[in-house]
Length: 265
Image (tube, rainbow, N blue to C red):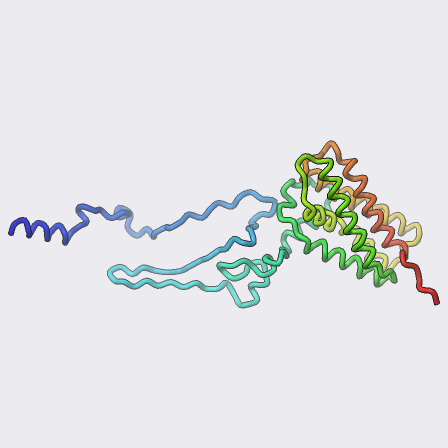
């Protein structure tokens, strides 16, 4: 009988044999994971398009078996088309490869060619910005009476393949065609400005020749600087800039002259 009473007392109070973890810190909530630190990147605060951010709110009631929790969206349905998206899933535009903050950062690097170029600038290569610039360039030339869409895409495709082949032959690190096309497309931005001026001013003259030459130098300097920084080819910048300058020279010819000529009446 005495042994049975002791056993019942032990079963009734098991905490004396199995002390509860965290009993010395009452009121401290349970932490199931620790947030990972944000790594250093060219884009501050950026995250991969596959990373999610799930924020759940819940409570555990003591003395009962009630567990409650809910996941609340950050906003309306239109939030998915922005840069924030719903909690727990990436934004729709980011899934499609469109990130306006990254496009703005790369465009600013092209517009400020004398700034230091970070070698991780093309870690998030995309074609959203280059396609936008090429379309704008073609539309500006169309408004100035030069429908050159076919020549623009043809020169861009052959030029990107040629630069891709030359860069991989010259560098030890190597680069893929996707990043080459992205860099060449972003560095076309000064040429897009010349195309916009062609709508208001005739470029077939001294002014047009000067502006086209400056845009060629600007585009070449920006593109060669990015390629040299990414591939670590600082001693070969002139060799990299020469074929790139020829490519942008073709785009300048398209903006100054009407390649197709006027239709015969």
